[in-house]
Length: 445
Image 1: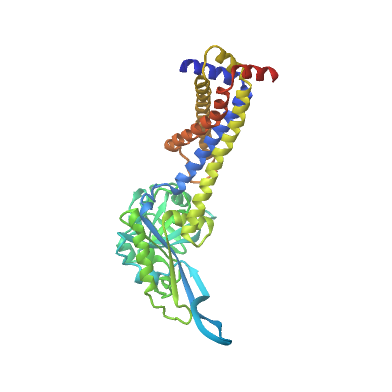
Image 2: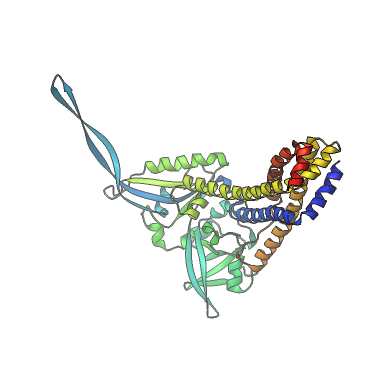
């Protein structure tokens, strides 16, 4: 029976070429777009080096200093008792914000108050988004750099190509050393390896290369840096200043993703106990902590609320993906209705020769399965071709899109589900039609 269904499905696809083309285009195009989107999201949000521990990370990216002043409102209640008016006066007390300053945290705040978070297994402090201009053979090269603590390498597992990471000794002794990415090595030295021990001249300082790491596929957060220097190489004024706001960030590592909230709670609890030195200027501190996904969404959407940013990002992404599924489904429903109505005489003849409603229903469902399967193969080939074009043309520099077979499998199942659903309703309707009506409907058409 299935063999006959298969032969009929192939013949129908070849006979109704226009309808088949539209259906296959919708399925294959949907799968191709989904593969590209998910491949890009896998690079941006996937647990790949140097972010394999991202589900256990808590980012402390922003600090807010506020001046809160008491706000007193008088409430007057009047009542009339036997012609006498009685006035009752009360007051409500609240606070209102007069001023606020917000930025990344100062080293003083992070080092003095946030270095001993018991809920965290480890933490690091770093200052990123610095740039330095160098000239190579009279050509200007702008490098992005980060100043990091020694524990930075424990939390962010960069893939070491050669050499070593600098450790606590380099931090303590302010050694002029650096870990660079392969991209930076290629731009500065002309090769992406074999330069350990060589020096780079940055702002008239001789910096020795001690390690080369694989260039991360994403430029988000500090990952856009091509040069990593010991934290103590930064301008000393940044380290000695007692300002609570500054250019530093911290990342904490929890034992598991379930322990992240404990880190957030402890950071906020400790921050609330800090006495600010100038309460007439600022008397309240608010610290903003975020998970990796919250931090990513916050920077992407330029929102100040990590939880809100995460919700907006996920709802927007979910709505976009759902749209890609719904549109081809509606298209397939319309096509299936037209296709099945045109075959009413075939249905009538099959019923006249003994086929029941279930036989008709199973036949059309099987045809949709075959159609979706062929569309899936075409979508796979188109996505593979598009990946090759994007990767070879360097439209996304340093980004290599790869095929996620698990995502393809689930996307194909979803397309198959919608494909079956789009044919089920019209097929069920036609399977219940009377023989005479089916033949009459065709003759009238």
